[in-house]
Length: 160
Image 1 (tube, rainbow, N blue to C red):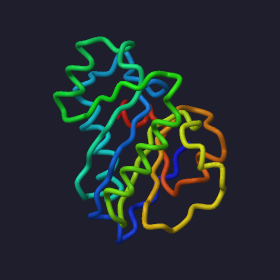
Image 2: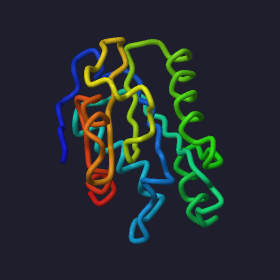
Image 3: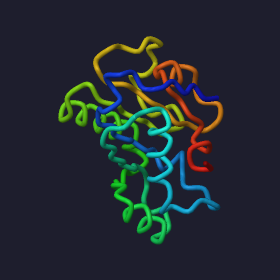
Image 4: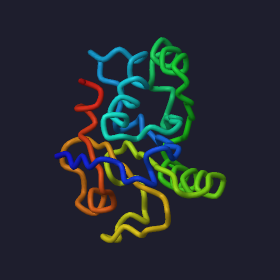
């Protein structure tokens, strides 16, 4: 499932923050971790998102091999260890914090299984100046997909 609309004019050169749930959208074994940042950027550029891009990964970093963490960090991806019991609330707080520090218009790309954002259960996307982009594994909850104009399957980005 993908809904790849080209960026609206006000979001083309806006900054994009990628909030990656590395716990449920992990680096596949066959994928080179040092290429992931490049592949995410490429997916965004193909849809005309040309502004600065920053990527933050969240999850239990104890489950990720040191070589993978080193490769991801070397490409500028910020790795954030979050204990499983605190995960959903922590990510929700991170998104709100990022929005308060970064004025609209801006893009937020969420890479997750779909149960990450408690507020996404509303089916209408508000026009608050933050454009939500999603990458997800197969079969995400409907409300998660309904919260964004642009979606990708996670594997379609990293297998490109």
